[in-house]
Length: 217
Image (cartoon, rainbow, N blue to C red):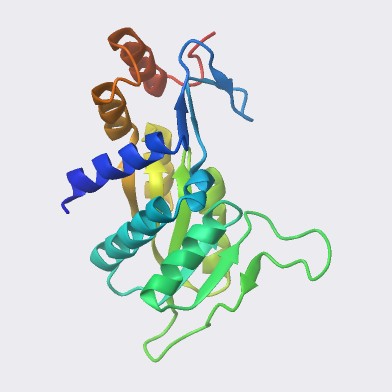
């Protein structure tokens, strides 16, 4: 399937299993305090074998195409842990997962599992797996930790992105290529085609993406 078909298919799956919920009239409140007409919890997909397998295989194919030199998969704690493990298994690659911050007890680890320090050609090439990209802040802390440990992070792959301009700026500043299976535009297109939302709700959802911090105030 081409990229557009994948974007549409993933959006359909997320809507079908209610991993994404759209409520412009009764907005959610994010931990940041933002009011949001959308709530996305891609962990829900793990409960549906057909959807889980589709996303696993789509991520594996995306990584092979976008980051062909990958040698290690790293999941972002916590929601990226199971997705990363599934993808690493599909690709037959080593796997670890990384917290945005080190633990404050025990061994104080930030990277769990084994991160190979180097290969025959130098530092191991790592692709980070995330479930959802909003601003990219916590995901990029994981990149910092991997680089500090000697890894060569060649990119990040995620199931879904809101496509906020600030996220694009943050990833560019860290020199981290980002590849996502689906995005906010594809989701709205599919939601309208499937009669999940009205034309008026579509306008509200589109305006939120332009200015999420002030939307709904």
